[in-house]
Image (cartoon, rainbow, N blue to C red; front, side, top):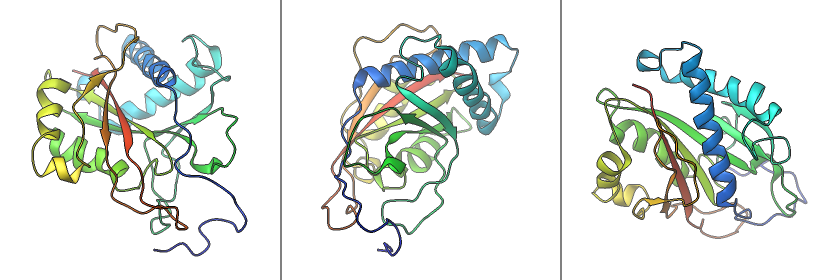
Length: 239
């Protein structure tokens, strides 16, 4: 473990950080859905766009328009400080000092005893479709980063954001993988997908779902084995 200089001496913090309310996750999902509506209306062609280009445009809409104007109830400066794209974060033990989650929703919270540099909703974005398999792209290169302590290691929640092509759905494409080996063990013995109740209906997005995963690392400074994490799955039609 490479903790030398990882944190300043004298910081008193607890792990995990306090949970993020499901209502905040639903607000985030609604904001992303609205960002997709605006992106489509602009003439941007989602069906052939590269993953990074989609993320870049979504980030601009989320931060420069939606968060500041308050078009989505709850998605404003009272709950979210800023939305960042690909900022650098240190992983759980300091061995990788420049991890870059795709989007980070910085939260407005009055919590004490937290590491403010790691108190946020971390979001990893992935294309899924025939050319971007759920196994290799979504699970091995995305979801696993939360399980292994690269992203959101101090948090109890994280989000996977899927740009969906070729009619892929959570129930048909993700759920069977999570229940099969080697992914069941590799991804922390995930629970079955569950819908988060109370969400708005969006014609080109699935309802927000959640799975719970065990994590495989030890928290720094003798704070014990990392507790489980809930991963929220926000899937959007990008065909």
